[in-house]
Length: 352
Image (cartoon, rainbow, N blue to C red; front, side):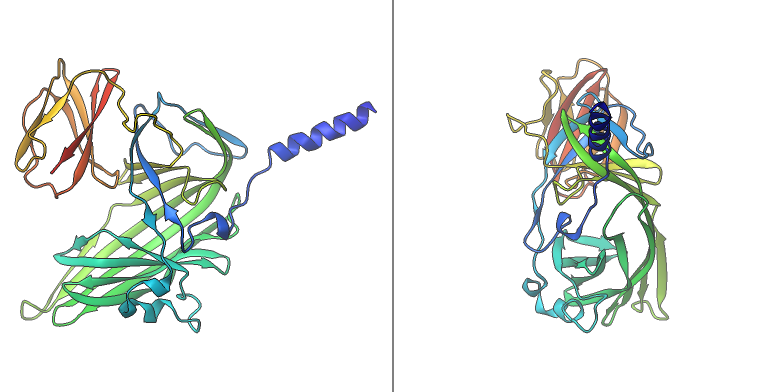
């Protein structure tokens, strides 16, 4: 009887330590809403640490929850602009026949403005990939496929799953020229185990993705034509993915060797709707600000970390004493300013 109990205990132990498998249903699909929360590391965190049956511990002392982002709706391709559908709603082109899309913010690259933009994704046929983009560029609605889709994950996603892709996309802009994007992605599911975050526990797989991209612009507006290329800094994305949410439980983005974005799923229940770790009375004025602003109420030197509306680290001021901050060149929008005075932290919101 003792041997039977030992065998049962061994089976239970093995089962409790088995890794999860991420399937298509666990990732974004049409009809889903993607909800994320920005966060900010309060001390050093090495995202490279990983392994089999690994335990990642992320406490409130390490990671500060910040504002909850507005949800991103994943819409059916049929509900996107007709001008874009031809390239992404074609069953005779299975690589680009997409399952959903979501709108992206207005953007500008090389003097070219992108509006009413949609990114298209495929989440079927054992692959989760970006297939292309539709956008109104300088007022002209255009669509472009990735010549080879940007494979984000092959499915099912389990430990040691890996892949790479080389993708190019080009928008031909009438009377102007073209905008092109070329990029390489390499990813590997390099760990699995348990993520302990903010007193919650999730079984996860860990994915590390490396993207190198170059934007290219060519214009014929200046006689013989001029072309420019803008290599982007290498981006490394670390994702801890569970079967409980359609976005990573934790995502850390490093650009050019610096952490530029930290996000979580909507896992933190803030009873006050406000994340504030300091009782110090601080105030930004003027707010909104057009040219300059400053933070009043500081009693000692502070370190400022300023995040834009996407949660990306926008600017840091290592030694701040209450002087004016020049915001005249900042884009209009909402910014979160994390003020650190020794071990004391506050989060302020600035409107520009």
